[in-house]
Length: 308
Image (tube, rainbow, N blue to C red; front, side, top):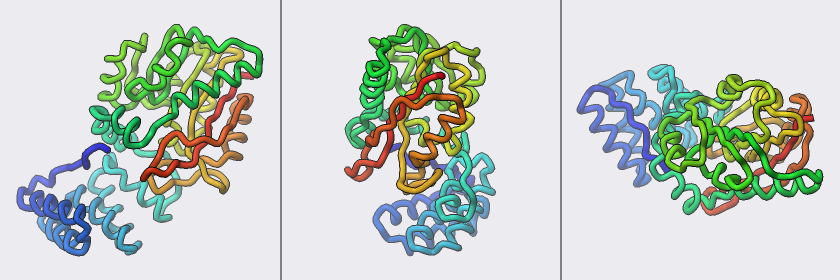
């Protein structure tokens, strides 16, 4: 996993107490860590990283109201919310679900980029691209149509693992990702004709009607709360009979929830309804886990749909 984001308070003593607190937190001494963080905050009242870690500790200790207060102070101190305090507020039920702060996603993956492939493939057993490739082949075979595509868009392309899985079946790939450092990694693969630093929705909005035959999103929709805008734009961008294939994390209830891993989980009925509303025809909806957390498979879905 990436290193912890640290935003200095500008006060050397406060920063040092924060670092000592982090060491104590990692060793499990949460009470002592919280005490040091409170000292750091006394020295630097707008110390965003200290407020955020204090929120984490309060949440871990079951101190809900105190955690909510700390996370709100962290977000107030950094309106871009690079730590993702708002995600914890959603998780705690203090606020309704909304999309992730773009600055949080960018900071997360900029830190992650140097060892992204190693962490996903070896630490988390990541298998999203291969699951998508098999699902697309199967869906196209069932429809008696070829699984070769002239123009493809890889949403949330990361380092290029999705394009690598489909490389022999796609003539031209465009990669879109919010993280500049991820785009640097993807460029080094030589798999993409074009690469763009944008979020998925705005990347799609910049594309012409019927300009893609395949759209992929491997482990990217988990960072989007409401899939309706992305799927609607995908339907517009896809050529007739074009295919969209993506993975999501899922749950047994209805709608969308935010999970323990601070990623969104979308229920199967929600996926079906949102695809239909976008004018996309569901070809496959398979229960399959694309990654592990703590060596346990995370419940997921592999989705393939086509332009009606």
